[in-house]
Amino acid sequence: MKRRSLILAAALTVALLGGRIATAHATDSSGNPVIAAVGDMACAPGDSHFNGGAGTSSNCGEARDSAQMQKDPTIDTLLGLGDYQYGCGTPAEYAQSYGPTWGFFNSIIDPSAGNHEYSTSKNSATGAACPDPNNAAQDYFSYFGAPAHQATAGEYSFNVGKWHLISLNANCSKTNVGGCGSGSAQTQWLQSDLNANSQPCVLAYWHQPRWTATGANASAYATWWNVLYAAHVDVVLNGHVHTYARFGPLNPSGGADAANGIREVIVGTGGESLQSASTSASPAPLANFRTFGYLRMVLEATGYDAQFIDSTGAVKDTFSGTCHGTAPPPAGLDISQAAPASVQADATTSYTVTVTNPGAASQSNVTVTDNPPPNAQSVSATPSQGSCSGQRPITCNLGTLGPGDSAAVTVNATPILTPTAVNVAAAQSDQTGQVTNSKTVNVTAAPNTSYVGVTNLGFGSVSPALAMGGVLQWSFVGPRSHSATDRTSGLGIFPDTGLVAPVAYRQTTFPAAGAYTFTDTATGKTIKVTVPMTARPATGSTTATFTLTWAAAAPPAGYSEDVQVKQPGSTSWVSLFKATTATSGTYTPRKGKGTYRFRSRFRRTTGTGASAYTTTVSVKVS
Image (cartoon, rainbow, N blue to C red; front, side, top):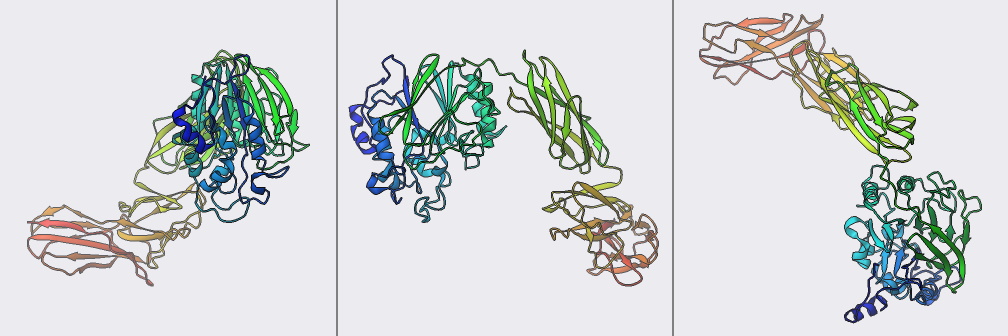
């Protein structure tokens, strides 16, 4: 049996923390371990209802509540259900309100973090700014120390008698918590912890409830309920709602399930304040009390007996249950993908996602969620059974898979950008948590084509170099609309793509050598496209003639090419061919040995406008 017993050497610590000296194995008369659970505890010392710690009938009742629980010497463990110290949760507030009351149980508490442990802006009682950021519940973890399990952000488990107890942190988006959804780090830990458990009875607890009793239910914890239900968990305890509410055993949809359901009990009655359950809550609690108090549970080898005891000592609710027993091995799903090794850009490829039920029992509500390659357009999906909807992501409801059965989803997509296209698929069912698989297809370039991705970061390449007559594909992969607009000093030969929504592409052909500038009007980012000329051969003698090529085809009417040379020993460029409409020319070196450099630009011969000169090409003469 777990017990943080105190010995005489710890007496000073006990006095400082308000802890107690108790027997090593506090149990009920039958010898079974006893736990208590409560949340939403100490109001802020600055609360108008604090009243020197005495509180009022419906506010700041922590002193009366904790004093009543202190009268029960059998309690072995206190499960803290979150929101221990209201206001900002500072050390000074803990010392004035929580410490003198609930601090009595610090030696036996196993806490779970609430939302008020992450107070970062204003004091909930006074409206004043909090003195420290506390955005990672630093004050909470510092106050409770090792029992709060800061290293795992509050997710941990332990055994008491024949019971396995699991503490989770339901502040899903906070620093280091690890999320609450399917596939999140915390949910994966929960699944692994349940898989390793051999205890016949299981209880989980966290702060914010799945079923709230006050109105809208918290879908953020639906995945946890699914995982716990599949593992045959018996009880879930929560706080957050400042009332006591006991539900009957519930399935993942909130429906009554006496055989396999999980019983949820909300005990947000530790003293801060009180509220009422809604008469329209669905599911509706079987019992509800608007009074301060705590839950007392005797953990038997095959079940439990429980009471809700208010701050006057009156027993307001009594209930019991039998454990489901150790869950069978998880059902599991297998997921795989098949696809061609490669595909040419702008051509369609298919990914076949196959989901198989390897278990001995049927699995219901099998769902595949597919995230197609972000650089692919024309996405569609066809299932072998059921139906699919959406595109990013695609959701396919495959229905039920019997033992050993498989179903497949064929995802067709057209990648428009090299070098790879990655399809990511996930599958889950009512009986199995999420399993994932990814498949990569290599995307090859079309002949004489280069590719530039255009996203919110601008152009995904730096000054691409093309062959004369080459094609540049602008692959717009978003997530917003973008453009590739010619800004080359009034050249005016390239059509403006305009704003293009992802995922789509446009192509530009570059007929002649030059350096061309394009702008994405959505981001203001620019890119320079370089098309170099060629000189053949690359070396020669003073009597050799070199062939210079600067265009793949004759320029359209009104356009020409300027070609220049820089001779050995010179720092100046000299015009070699000016305003030529030819595609190539010859040159015989006249200045002796050395390196001859050539460059060219594409220009308008009617009106104004020209590209920048292209990068130089060199010929060595010996």
